Structure formats: C-alpha cells, structure tokens
Image (cartoon, rainbow, N blue to C red; front, side):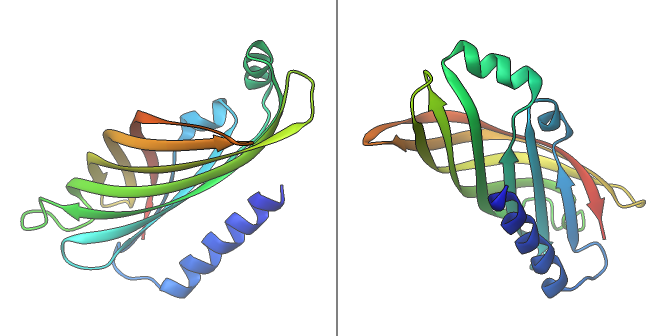
Length: 179
C-alpha cells in the first residue's frame, strides 16, 4: 500500500508541476485491468509538435478472481507495483494535432513485488522491461481519449537469485481525458 501512495502522490505532483495547455495533457487508464486486480494510471504530456512523454504507474492488488488463479499456481498474498516511461513520436503530426494519430512508442518499465510461494516465506520479484509499441490515439473535441497500441517488450525478471528473460507482447488499451 505504501507503493501505491508514493506512486499516486508522484503522479499528482507531476501533473501540477507540468502545467496545462490546449489538450497537451492526458490522464488515462486501462479499465479492463481493474477486473483483474490491476490499478493503473498513465499521464501523457505533449512536448513538441510531433512528440510526447508518457509516464505510467500501476499497482496490483488481491482481487477474488485473481486470488484463486494465484492459488492454482502456488502463490499467495501477491503484491506488486511498477513504473514506466515512454517517448511517443506521432507519424501523423503534419496532418493531425498531437496527441492524435499514429505513433511509435519506445518504452522502459520497472516492476517490483512480493508473494508467498507454496505457503513458505515471502519472496521478492523485480522485472525490467524494454520495448516499443505502435498504435493510434483518438482524441475527441470533448476531451475523451482512446489509445490502442501493440508491440514487443523484452523483459528480464529476477527473484531470490533466479533470473529469466524473454520477449513478451506489450499492449495498450486505455481511455482517458485530454486537457
């Protein structure tokens, strides 16, 4: 829970410090994640006529459905959080005002957490991810946004001396508000 408080205080301060303009800020979330115990928030800030920076935060909490899935694979009391940073270049910036249109988004993420494994002591886990997505973001005049993207993410995970790595899919499906 401490991770969650720090994450959202940081995101709130970031929004206040960066100021506002004519739809140069977007706050969004993936509503499907809530059904699976994932609270997530993304802040996107337009930094030029063709690009933006993307800041992400997430916290995974125990939800009744996910608790049962975790138990099947031998995990209990799973808690995790993460942060991410991306840079978006909008290919369509000459025809559409950024942050609307097609983009490429190189990104990095770091996740951390802990879980009980097979009723033993708690073990920690950390994951570093580097990847890119291509996508399209819709921004309507009302300020409502829809962001869709997909791409590869190379992830390196480590837990108590063990490590694994590999290429995984990365996807974005989020709704939000531009201001």
